[in-house]
Image (tube, rainbow, N blue to C red; front, side, top):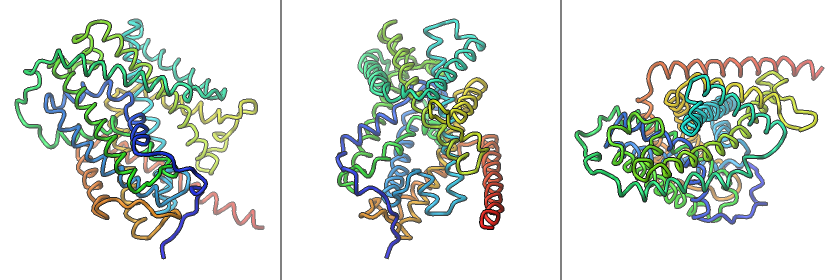
Length: 441
């Protein structure tokens, strides 16, 4: 008899079908990264860049299938760290919670860097480092203040941001295709495996978020059929979009793509004219601002939860007496994210965020394998990954291969972060154990 985790899924209406779930995945996945990554991918692989997109898409497909199975077996709030905690215990779950917070912090900082770069193309005064830093500080202060006041700007902005990010990209695909020079797409040599591995690791930033769209699995009808089909449709559509944009940008800009700071806008400007460039810049800015609003709303709650549970100083869990929001956690979070954005480049932040993502993905794939072995289920019939245990093993193999592209300094930074997190966990556990006897007496 398998273990059962209790949840409230039975009270939910299962109304999300294949296309609804696929649309949700695309909406979450297509974010700020694609407006900058074509230049970085071109610098590494040139015209052979589509290979890295395809490799990354296959790896993400395997990874997300693992998330789908784990999510159908664990009905607890918390997502990935809940899966890992049930599978491997509280210490592993805590580390995954820390990884989630790190991902959000570095991803927000990375997108903020690109956001400032795009706005600076429209407002030249912001192109100076001091102007960019001041602008980023203003943006984070504004979003922090909005969230402290309890205004849910991210929710109301989401629909506009979705249209704003997809419409300019489709315009570039159609208009730019007519200006492509075939000679710019010619392969001079096959890409080296090491270069593909590191570039695929960088591209995780553009594909990340697929797993987040699977959160409402309790409201998906016929989950065993809907989830894999929606994942296939969404990943196929996203991959076609990304590869198309990469080829259009490469075909239009040629060697100039690798050095461009706003690659898609520059491609639109050369192919369509000034109006096309402005459309891409505005669309990118609106899209990234929407992303930042949503993330600044969500990430501080992780700090709040850690403080509430005794892993951080209690003051971080303070709630504003008037607005009833975790204002200290919000202030701490926006300060950390702003510091990252001002002092680091997009590439460095993206690689660190992706290293964190890959470690989290690997842990969740292993958790899915273990949950299946232990027979853990959330009450209904769990989603079974096609291929059985081979799927999470293949996903872990793909992750391990992409991790070969991580450099020693990046591993060292991650090691320090995990060591600090481990110390925090051990200190908090000892405090709890020391506190319990006094309470009992």
